[in-house]
Amino acid sequence: VRPLGPPLRIKRRTAWELAHRPRLDEIGAGLRRLAAQADEDAARQELDRALRAAVAVLPRSPYYAACLRQHGVAVGDLRGLADLTALPMLDRAAYRSAWDALPTGDLAGAVVVKSSGSTGEPVSVVREPFEQLHMWGVLGFWLTQLGLTLPPRPRIVLLDPLPSALEYSVRVRVVGDGRGALHRLSLLHPRVRERLERADPAVIFGDPVGLHWWGRVRPRARPKLLLTSAQHFAPTDRAVISDPVVNYYATTETGPLAWECLTTAGVFHVLAPDVWLESVAGELVVTRLRPTVVPLLRYRTGDRGHVARHACPCGFHGWSIHGLDGRHACAFVRPDGASVDAWQLAALFKQVALDAFQLEQTARDRFVLRALPFADEPRLLADLDEALRRLGWTARTIARAPVAPPVGAKPEPFRRSFA
Amino acid sequence: MSGWDLVTLAAELDQAPLASPLSEALAIAVIADVLRSGGVRPPSVAEWQALVAGARRGPTVLRFDLRREQLGVVAHALQSTSLGAATEAALRASPPTDPTAALEEFLGAVFPLTAEMIRSNRFRREEMLRRWASTWRAAIAGETAAASTERLGQIDYRKALVEYERAEKARVEEAAKRAEALRLAQEAEAAARGWRE
Image (cartoon, rainbow over all chains, first blue to last red; front, side, top):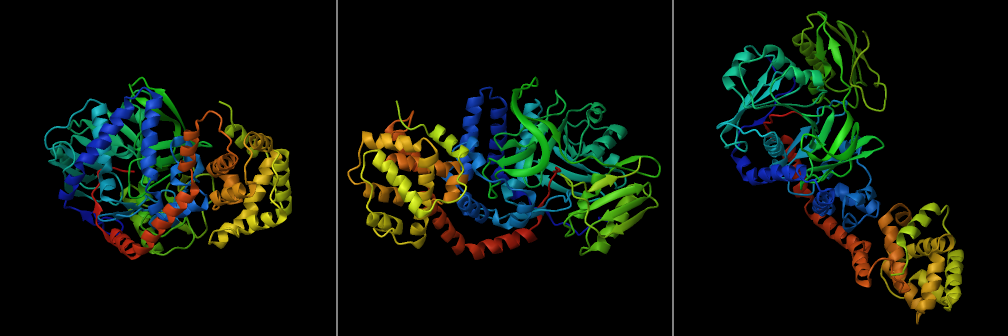
C-alpha cells in the first residue's frame, strides 16, 4: 500500500532516549503523588512551586518577553496559580504565528512537528528531545495507577487506521525494562491480525476506530492496557472491550492533558502537576507546568468543559474535567451503509498550507471540499480520493468549492449533511 | 494591626475607572490639596515644575515623560477612592520633613509604570499603592513592615525591566544560533511515536 502524503523521516537511533529515563520516571512519580494527594492546599502549594519554576525562564522566550513587557507583568508577580490571570491567554492563531518565538533556548535535538490540522489550521510545534518522549512517562503513571506491570521486552503497538497506511518498527528504551519495541501497524495493510498476534503487544495505542476493529476482530492477544485518543470514545465502545482502556485527552501543542476515569464515564482526571487547566467562560485553557523549552501559559484549546476538584470513587484525588466537549464527532456513511470516522482524513490536511477547510459529505458518494485556493491542491485532492477509496468508497466524487468554510464558535472541518 | 487596606483600595479603584487623563494642573492641584489637608505644605510652583520635568536626576526621556500620567493616576486615586483620606491621616501621623523630596522619591520608584499598566494590571496597581504608602510611611493592614518591604521587592517592576533587558541582550547575541537551531529542528527526523494526540 503506497503511503499517502510526503515521506516521513523516522528517528531510528534510540540510544539517546536513555539519558531521559530518570526524568521520565520523575514525571510518573509526580503524577502519582498528586493523584494521591487528598489535601488541596498541599496540592496547590506543589503546583504553585511548579509554576514559579515554569515562569522563571519566560524572559528567555522572545514571545513571552514581549508579552510580559507589553502587559507590565514581572516574573516575580506570578507566585502561584491565582496570579495567572495577570497574563493574557494565547490562542491557536497567535501560537501559529509565534511558534518559532516561543522557545526559550536550547533547541539541540529538537524537531518541529505539525498539529493534525484538524481545525484546518496546522500549527508548527517545537519539540525538544524530552518532550518527544514525555508520553512514555505518562504511560508509566497509568500502568502504576491501574496496578499493571509490563512483561520483559514489552512490545507496544500503535494500531493505525489512518489512510496514510504508514508502518514502522523501532526500539523503545525508556519503557519497562528498556528492551521494548514499538510497532506501528496499519489496518489498511494485509494480515494485520496475524502480525498483531505475532507481536503480542503489552500495550496498544489507538483511537476509537482501531478499538472498534479490535472489538470486532478480537485478535488472540492479551494486552495489559489499550489507550485511545483523538476522537470521541463512547461508553458503548468501552463496553465491547474486556481489557482496560485509557481514553486520554491531548493536543499536539500541549501534550497529554487528562484521562477519562475508568469508574466514572465522562470525567477526565487532569494530569497535574504536568499541566494546570482553567475553565475560562467554559473553554479549557492550559498552562504547562513541567519545565520545557517551549513554555506554554494560558493556551486556549478551543475545547469546552469545566474543571473542578473532587475525590473520585476510583481513588484519584485532584482536578477533573467535566463535560469535555472537544472535536465534533463526524461519521461519514459509505454506500454500503457503514459508518466511517471522518477524522481519519485529518492527517492528510496537515501537509498542505491551508488556513481553513471543510469537507462535507452531501450524499453517500459525494463530497464537497470548501477552502480558499491553496498550493498543492491537486495533490491533496488526489490523496483524498485515494484515501476515500481505501476506506470503502469504490465510487466517489469530490467537488471543489473555492470559498472559505463557514465560521462558527469552533471549526467544523468534517461535516455530513444528509441523514 | 491598623494600616491601609489594599484590597479595599484596589476594589475602589476598580469601581472608579479613569475615563480620561487628568491635566497636569488638575493633578497637581488634587495632590497639593491632600497634602494641605494632611497639614503639610505642598511643593512650590517651581518645585512642581522640577518634579514633573524630572530635573533633579535621571537620564532617560521616557522616565520623565511618564511623570505627568503617573501624577494623574495618583490624583485620580486620591480623588475617587479612600486613598485621599488615608494619605491625609498618614501625613498627620508622620509628617514628612521634605514633601518635595518624598514625591521625587515616589516618582523615582514608579518610573516605569504607565497609566495603562496601573489600570489593567493588578500587580502594578498594587505596586503603585504600596509605593505611595511607603512614601508617606503608612503601614499596610495585616502586614509587618518587613513583610511589606519583602512584597514590594517581589513586585518591583524596575527589577523586572533590568532582567528583561539582560535577557533581550542575550537573545540578540544568540539570534543567529537560534535561527540555525530552528532550521535544523524543521529538517530533523521525527521521533517515532506510539501515541496519537
